[in-house]
Image (cartoon, rainbow, N blue to C red; front, side, top):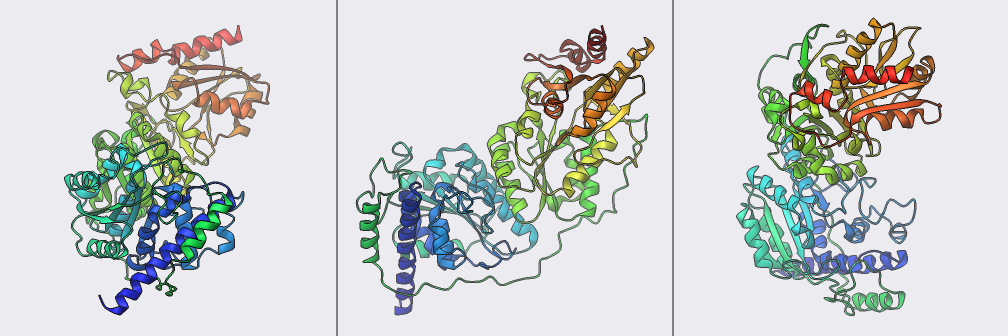
Amino acid sequence: MTDGADDRIAALEDVATRLRINSIRATTAAGSGHPTSCASAADLVAAIFFDAMRFDPDHPREPASDRFVLSKGHAAPVLYAAWTEVGTVKLDELLKLRELGNDLEGHPTPRLPFVDVATGSLGQGLSAGVGLAIGARLAGTDARVYVLMGDGEMAEGSVWEAAGMASHEKLGSLVGIVDVNALGQSGPTMLGHDVKAYQRRFAAFGWRTVVIDGHDMRAVVDALARARLRRDAPTAIVARTVKGQGIDEVAGLQGWHGKALPRDMAERAIATLEGRLHHVPAPAVTRPRRRRAKPLASNGHAAPPPLDAKPGSSAATRETYGDALVRLGAANDKVVAIDGDVKNSTFAEKFLKAYPARYVEGFIAEQNMIGVAGGLAAQGFVPFASSFACFLERAADQIRMLGISRSNVKLCGSHAGVSIGEDGPSQMALEDLALLRTVPEAVVFYPSEAVSTEACVRLGAEHHGMVYIRTTRPKTPVLYADDERFAIGGLKVVRASDADRCTIVAAGITLHEALAAHDELAKDGIATRVIDLYCVKPVDAAGLKAAARATGYRVVTVEDHYAQGGIRDAVLEALGDAGVILHSLAVREIPRSGPPQKLLEKYAIDRGAIARKVREILG
């Protein structure tokens, strides 16, 4: 190497040393954190930021900028220290790590402009990286994505779901770096320092691989340079490291995970590290070359026809979802669809046929699919991810983390409830409303027919943040004119009179049962009010209270969902201080296979059960 190259290596080594020093300072000041996990990764992070990446520090989410995902989110201080080196984070701010009100939290979140997705629940960063890389390709940029993973999280199945998809998609712009420090939280990792085992696993998934000493800066720089040469497959850099490298008193020792150094030990470690500095100026950040993004490919088809749903006709809400998605795709080229190999049942296949360049096949790997959707959203796209609602539940943690990210991801869960029929309980989502309602700031829609489904898809796309749309398998009659207006946080009073004595609140399939019960009760002179709670979160509390007051504070909720966490609880939360007598009809046991209408009857959420409950209430 030339003297200039030697100076550059020395400069990068100095950056790595300062990353260790500042990680120690920050965690000791906080009294908590993971300095040893930061220390093992410091050389890797220094080389990624100051040699490999091309990014705009002032606009880190600029499409042309390379992206960095810290999958081992507990090493957040080394990430913050890197941005301190860049100049984006001030040192005094870094030393307020983990303080209430400081965006430099214990694990990274997108409150920070240089963080694309929240990390810290391990095993999810590579999926986000896959989404970021696909998004960069869709946007027509040559931006690269670097994902730093810990060896402990390599036991997570979602990592290998992502690895398989990255290879299938030929994501040559994706670089995964594994920090193999051999120590987890409570003891040694599964494979310890067997770096060849990690290499074989990535190679088996179709990745280009290289094994290095993660503390040899020349080797790190060379490996990152090699990753930039080929673009037909992702690259895995397996780096053998030492946990606590550079902190001589704890390096390689168990029992120091997640523990800040005591002040005296921190002072000794910092003094030693400062003595190792070459005092070479840090390399300048390399900015990307901005290119005009290419337009997204079109299939050349004419714009899809408008919604054709007339009162009296019938359609399955899952099929209307597919039609609505196609119309949305025609209006907004940022809309992308991703599905988990059930596109012919969710009807996401309609979007695939219309806009194949903007469709991503997620296969039967729902955890990865949701993580990929988060990466796509971080690239500025509006991803609609669909599957059977029960299979989306497999990705509960990914959904939770995207909620923390305030990710602009849209989810559609089809085949919800016992109304799917003969497929049986393993296919019947009866917990999904409860799951999605608990995600902060998420919007939850449950349309009952074609017009409201079309509206919910459109409203979901317009809303910035997570949206869940629950669709059903059977066809249902159209209830609304095609110019009916809907809103987030709205409801529809579909039957009402001055004589109403009880309010029935339903959504989806049970709304039609409620309407049939209304007609049956009317024959006996019993007037009821029927509400379509198409938006389950946020609910229209004022509208519910008005209906309750008008009907003697008697309310019945009916839902194709378990009793906990769904429509009942949403209504109860809204009416909790209104003195309402609330009665709930819901699925209260593990269901069985059978014809849909028979199942609605068996679990007492059909028209007959509703009518009986109203008669019971009214005495």
